[in-house]
Image 1: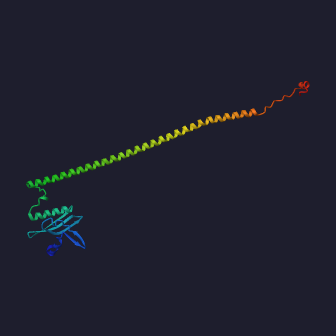
Image 2: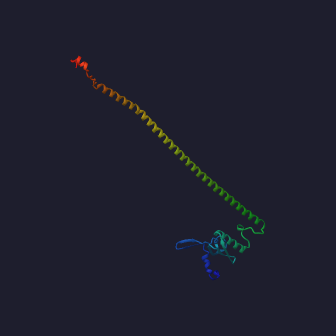
Image 3: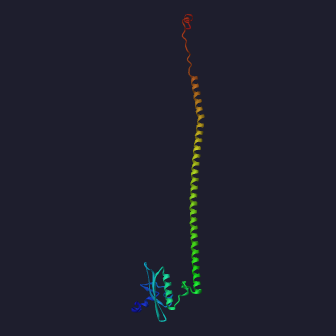
Length: 228
């Protein structure tokens, strides 16, 4: 109805790029120029239905419209829309995007399944390698952190042991110096004591000796009056 009512609109929808106010923009419909006969129409995205596309194409005077809703990405919606248009015009899906049917059709089905399995195998091996790489990286990081912790603990232990040894050496040196000072002070004290003794002896020798005067007895007074 839209194309019948506004046929000139395709002149705008078929443009791959357009310029507005000196700014060139690209059309979101990537089927233009890549899928034969496509000349429109509208792309869209909403959270409820994902990536959507309403595409129209003209081949040999025949126009078809393909509508895809719920695409998980722009590439998925473009691929599925191109498949529908090719099926509508030719009656067969293109080999590049062929999916395996339930009944299967000989070699083409076998090839598509082999390609799919190959891709899956490559993806699984890549994912497994990535998982192993991440695990090894995590293990390496944990080992490195553990080594750092052990190194830091060992460094702290050596620091504390060095501090304790230094304190012991300080204590021993202080005690030895105290003993030396006391041992050095002892002879000084002895010398001082001997000097004091000598001084005392000299003082006693210099002091006048007082003789004890004996009182004469009565007999001596009578016998020796001159001496008394």
